[in-house]
Amino acid sequence: MSLINCPECKKQINSEVDFCPHCGKKQDKSLVEKKPIKKSTIILMSFIGIIVLICFIILKQPPSLTPEQKKQQEKIEAENKRLSSLFGEAPRVSSWDGSVYIVKQTIEASAKDPDSLVFENWSGLGYNNQGWTVKVIYRGKNSFGGYVRECKWFVIKFGNIISVFNCN
Ligand SMILES: [Zn+2]
Image 1 (tube, rainbow, N blue to C red):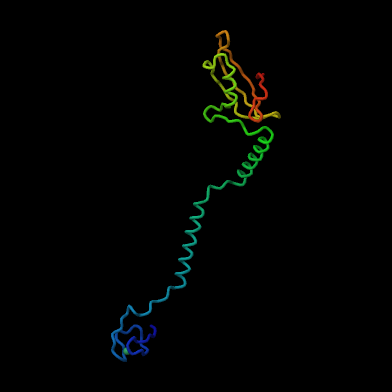
Image 2: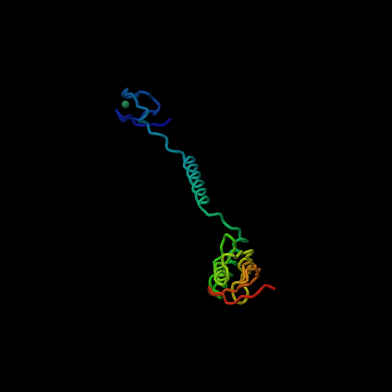
């Protein structure tokens, strides 16, 4: 119980009585001061708030790499940077068949019968001490109408084919 002032006669009365013992005024319980929010409730609410906030931040983060993966990625990026400063940007490679655009174009341009060309295999892009490299195996009609099968290495530097040689 607590003591409050009667709203009518202003004398101190027990907050739980229905009528003022001094003036008989009916006490309106809804006017009685509400209990202050407990400290423990405030702490609990802030705790829940912080948890929700942390969950929200975690969910917004992209999946993080392990330190090992991060190291690996940095290594690859550094290597790509070094190679592109030496040989120019890596030649465009088709994600469809692994063909290197500039090489395919060059072979087609020099073929006797471009429509007869069949590219059998692309090695994927690599590099040597001269530039970007790719090996390609292809077939095509020669000037006599017969099919020839070729295997060639191409070396590309700053967007140009700088050398071509036959596979061993
Ligand atoms: Zn009263």
